Length: 396
Image (cartoon, rainbow, N blue to C red; front, side, top):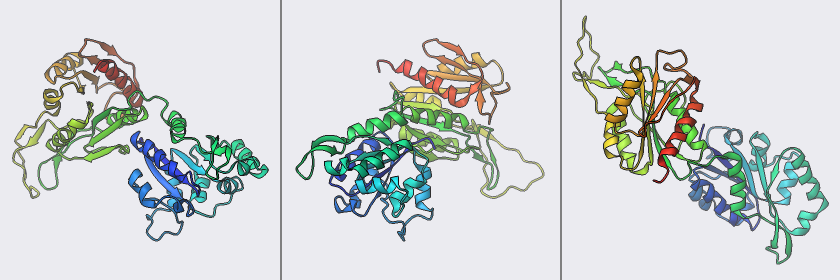
C-alpha cells in the first residue's frame, strides 16, 4: 500500500493534548493515522477528539466487542509505516523495555516491525531516575528512536527536563524518515489506470490487455514524494494502491465522468488507463444466443481530449501505447489532446508490453524535449515522468 500509515500510541499524561496537534499535522500531510490509547490517556482527552481528527476509530481495549474482525493488534502492527508513542510515560517505557504486553498499545507495538519513535513526557525526577534511564538505554540499543524530551516548565510547576517535544518537531522527524523527498507536497493528481469494459450483453464485454501496473507505479511515486492521488481505476490485474481517494469504474463514459467530477481538485492529470475507444451500439441486457453475431461499434468519448479542453493551467500527461510509427503517433496525440507530456512506448518490444513490470518509453514534452529511455522498472519510469512534470510546472 502506497499511502503511509501512522500508528500513534498515547499514554496517560497531561501532554496528551499535544497529540491532538500531532494527529492533525499527519492528516494534513495525507498520512493515514490510527490512534491507540491507554485507558489513562482518555482521562485527559475524549476518544471523539482523536476520531474526529484522524477520521478513524480509536482503539483502546484488546477485548473490545465492537472491534473489527481482524486480530486488531496484529493488523495494526502490520499496517504501520511508523509507530509513534507520544506522550510516552515512564510506565509505558518500562513495560516496553521489559517485554510486558498487557494492553492494546503494548501488545501492538511488540508485534510491529515498523520504525518506532518514542516521545517521552514526565516529571524531571522520573526521567532522571536510574530505572528510566536504563529502560531508555535498552530500547535505544534495540533500535528504538527517541525525540526529546526537552527542558521547560512541567505540569507540576517544576522547570527541568521531561517536557514532551513539540508536535512540529516530532512530525518533522517522522516525516523526514518516511517521506524524504517532498517535492509533490501540496499537489493533487488524478491518476487513471487499468482497462475499461464495454458490455456486449449481460455476460460479455469488450476490453483490452491493460494491467494497471503503470498507473499504480505513478500513484505510489506521487505519494512517496508527498502528493495526494485521486486514483480512478478500471479493471486491473494488480492490487490497487491505498490513496487519498479511489474510484472504481467499468466503462469509458464512467471514467470520463469520474475524471470530470474531480477535475477541480487536481493540479495534475495523468491518463495511464487504457479506456476502450469503442462501445457496442446494439447492447442487449440478456445473454445473446446466436450462431453468428454482428456488433456495431461506436466511438466512446475521448477522455484526454476533453480534459485538454478544460485543463487551464493544470498539467495533462497522456500515454501512447503503439505498435508502429510510435514517435509520429505520439506527437500527433500530444497536439490533438492539448497535452503537456506524452509517454510513448512500442508495446511489441520485450519488456514494454502489457502486464509487464518494466517499460521502454519515450517522454515528449510540449516544449519539444524528446527523451528515449532505456528499459526500466515501471516505478523508476514513474519518477522520471514526475520529474518532467515538475520541470513544466515551474512558475505556475
